[in-house]
Image 1: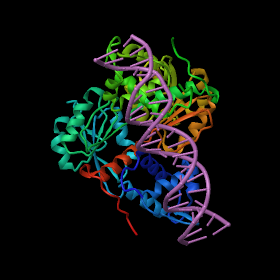
Image 2: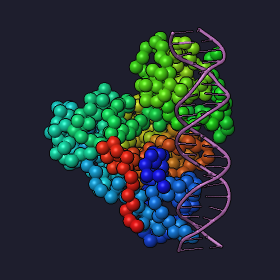
Image 3: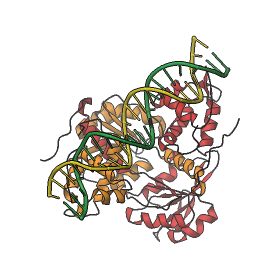
Image 4: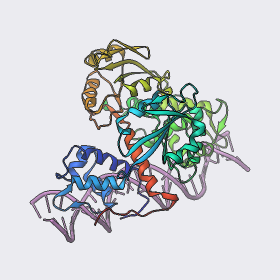
Length: 219
Length: 219
DNA sequence: TTCTGTGAAAATATTCACAGCT
DNA sequence: AGCTGTGAATATTTTCACAGAA
């Protein structure tokens, strides 16, 4: 099995498998086919994805759910606790503070920053909002390794730079703008407009499930 | 050029190209290489993506920004107006109502639903919150074609079913659960936890930019 | 027998490299 | 001279199909 250069899509699927497994009891057994059906892929795909990392299954049986969950958690490094910083205490930031997926022991938002003097010092989700100029000083103190950007587009690059200065190793960017980070920092953009635009494309090109040929707008 | 079966990744990139173009004036010219550098891909990739849909460039020159923007907008069906329904008037829903990417003339949230009797009848973002049992009746009246689910996980599948009954052609699901929809309805899951888990994986496997081989947790 | 793990084959996606247009 | 559009070559990802383990 390959040791690195695992495609991101495989990691995404591991995450999906993990969620699907949560519906089963630890000591139950699930086959690659069973798991594949739940998440909408093929049995071969499931086996290939898992086989990158080891031999977790029992031939003739399948995968023991509890063990598989532990293995995937370990692969995704979810058997540790990540400390996160949230920058941008607006509506989206507030929503994320309450989002179930962000309220897990593996991912804890431990500091919140904003640049609005009216917000600084106030509490949000149990955290006192800090000024953005404190980022690079406070991140090491809080042991933050992941930063979440929920600022307006204009501020995003500056905030990213500060987060990098503060020593984060990963950034989740919700601001609707592409930002750049140095090598060695992992950046994930979550672009909500893009998702809508993709829907827009597929809806208008798949009307009634038919294959519709593309029509040029001009010439 | 192919007429259908365009990979989703190409559509994603078109969306990214479109955003990158917004920084330039309509009558400026940009080369595939210039665009590629901004969005972090290759010139060949840009040309290939665009060539699926037509010949938009000028050999020896590049692409005229205004024209290219119009063409991509047309491909993505952004030269029309989509009417959306939002189900789940919680924090995330409220945040989305205010999200810049969702406040464009192309995408208008025209109705909001919730199942909380305390919320129904109240206003949010200028819309009166309707009860979820009204979904299938009201969607056709409002001309809604896209539904956004921001409910808790438990409610998501039921809501999706209602949206489908109401005639939506696309669903953007923010609930942290996989849902299923019939053929002909396009589903996009936005899984915020997954993004964090991917970061978790890459950070812990790329420490100091080194290739670190994976260590099995057992055996 | 059933289902895993995995090479080999097939399908997709990306990159190369260049003819031809401006 | 410079840059597009595009077949051909590569590279990557998925699927097939089967030997071997339980």
